[in-house]
Length: 485
Length: 106
Image 1 (cartoon, rainbow over the protein chains, first blue to last red):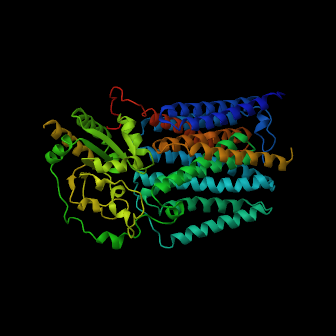
Image 2: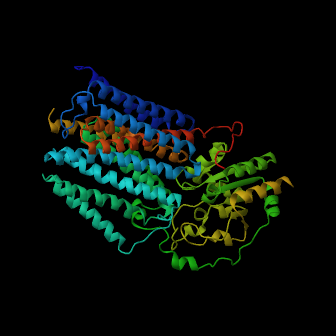
Image 3: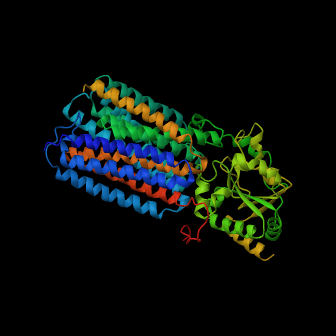
């Protein structure tokens, strides 16, 4: 079939899709237009995929690459594969995305990232198998892009699976840093193997076993890179791997000579890199620092300084309720403990109850509260907390001095005043100035340590009262106590 | 078009798209970082286009198997990514409406 106008038209449809991705991201700048932006982006995706289907249906020859034999005619088995794959993947994606609990959302995003990276790697593997089968050395562009796609895509695949497993708290992938003796050496060795293999292939050799070794090294590298990193740093890792996937997809675009893959992949590669840096900045750590070492490695000496117990003051529910109900301004500091206990609805209920008594309630959101930047905002928004009440760290910190009560629920390291002076694992991390409030109520299950593995000096502050309770149950009791006043 | 010409034109697209990504993302407020990460995550599901290409070009069992997995993976990335992002974003409303049933407890 000779349809010379078809492929330019499809090219323009791909361009339209790419434009929609960019416009969609622009609209995600503001909460008011963000949802619409996501729909614009999804619309662009539908156009790009629909156009691809039309192209492959009427002009299957377009699917031929440098590596493959000429494609002629309708490939019924190929279409069966496409339809079955879309049905399976779409069904799984739809089901998991619809049913996931919002607290478990970061690990699902990581899982979607893993399969995206896996798909990109598979494209290059398939392409390379054809070259190796014909014993042909690919042209330099395709050669470089194929190796990079396989390496980056494979690292992303296993790395994201491990990250997802860590966030789920699976026993084979504990959230604490897993330090294997000599692990760094293994990781460095794997990297060296991949680099040597890549140089061998790029200098005009074609070898399936060498590619196999590179693939294996990259897959294991993804595991050894992610395992030693603590759960608290997972957001940064997921964001970095998201950026990797984008890059792998762009490489797949070079392998297949497809512009829309290059544009979308590069967009995500750049956005992921920026996000990663923003997250690392929020923790006042460099990305390199996070990738190299497990958080809390140096806990030993600092952790012992102020033994737990000491001068901790325990508070009763009724006392806490009185403090809150008769305050004129309360700042709620939600942390990961609140998310784990699924207490976001209870905290909104308490806030509304206090507001009905004329108390001014705000929420102080640390940039890395929850498990990903902005995660806490999502959880609270889900509980119908109006977002103007959610204050970011720089905006809320000056207000703690004027607050009558700071109510800390399940947050730990981000409130630790030890971060202000050197010599502690959290030193230099920006914190919420909770200790400036006139009274502090900390709701926490135990004196247990946070991810940094150190004791929180805030708990020893004379203004601090501790409410030892699970966030959800504790809030329910607190609500009942306020109502009883 | 020679291989070099094709590479140069693709590489130009690549570099400009990276700059575009930097420019667009750096303006997003922290509140939206999680939905943004998820949204960007769904965009790289465009790899489905590539997966469809290798499926149609497939002519041996291994290629069919690899492209089947690639198509399924990529579609999961696209569909799941957009749906979960939409779920997150639908929660950003200026004023709470009627309390909705609690989906997170069960």
